[in-house]
Length: 397
Image (cartoon, rainbow, N blue to C red):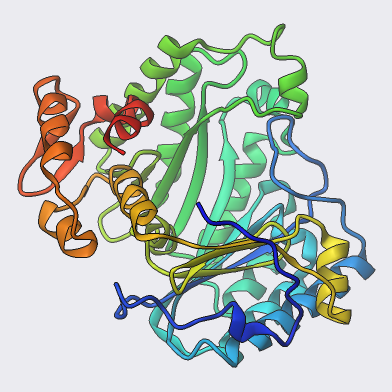
């Protein structure tokens, strides 16, 4: 992998924002805006976030707008998806969030029927915020519920109760949102088969269009990591049973299992996240945000202050930048496509990368015999294969 640091200043965008790669010129990019503010970090979270003040939120909004203005002057294709995540985007404030959404619509040419998502947490969601977001063009929200059991939420360090979550969801419907995603977590400290079944039942009673269901990961340098030896965490076998329960329950309820951790009603798969998994171009903005654009990957410094300073006064904001060699892109293609239930066609792999597919196909045939992979003109992993996806993908690449 070829990595290098460069001193990139605002106004030198052409060195970063090259035209979309020749391999998929017809694919429209997505935009990701990172809001790195939280009221308090959850016990399991290792994402970059800090506390917000009104002045810091204002400065950060202006820095993001300046960065978007630079990119808009260089990125001439239409934008298909916009995703504002965090952190907790609501900590930026209604006025600043609306300003950002308005700026995106003003600066960029949006495709017909764009998907525009904002992440929300129940405790920071109210009718005024939701009405403002809808008025500013947001047409999809993602609510971080995680569990319907309040004791489990407390162990995660969440600030909301399940009643708060139900209230936020109900208000979103009343305001007119017809595309709502919710996050659900399994493998939580102290979780049982019964409590997971209860959470699934309660989540399904809300009738969301999309459900992201993630297994809890114990990340280093988090409060959960520090107490991991004493925590009542499910072992790998229990995690596997929980995952199978999630897949079976949501499948019976009519949700399509379109990606390892994501389920959707027909027509409601996350178009923005599909860009990541299909190796389509996307541009990220904000500290710690990543981009994949023009066969080049890059990310920005994980510091709000350094990011604001860099945008304002021409300081360094690039954390790393790399041109992705074709060999690495081929491996990445396999890794990401096998996260999707649609998998991939061998003919597409060979067309894109001009590589011999026979060794890979031989391994996939072995996994097919074990019930871990399937072939119907396209290779994909089964639900059982998803559980072992890391080791399967490693063996292929």
